[in-house]
Image (cartoon, rainbow, N blue to C red; front, side, top):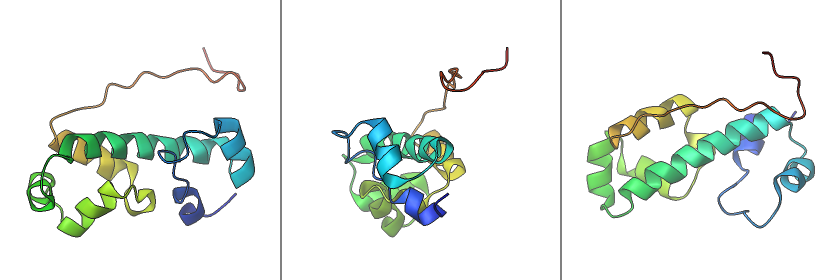
Length: 111
């Protein structure tokens, strides 16, 4: 398995034209690591969508983070944020997550 920095360098948002299976295979990462990176990317894209109309100073104040951290969000630097932190930032822009588990076709899901 690759280290966290290699996994985090996977830029899902910018690689939409490549299939999921191809990305996983070419980057030699396992499905779980891909899933975690995908979750972080989706949260980061969501947060960015909510703050993109704000100046970095305003976004930093709203999120209670530095302007440098706002820049990291805008530049999709996945490795700089944990899933927990992204969930907190989602809350700070006025949203909570509604999680719906989905069975994986390649694994036997517990009933």
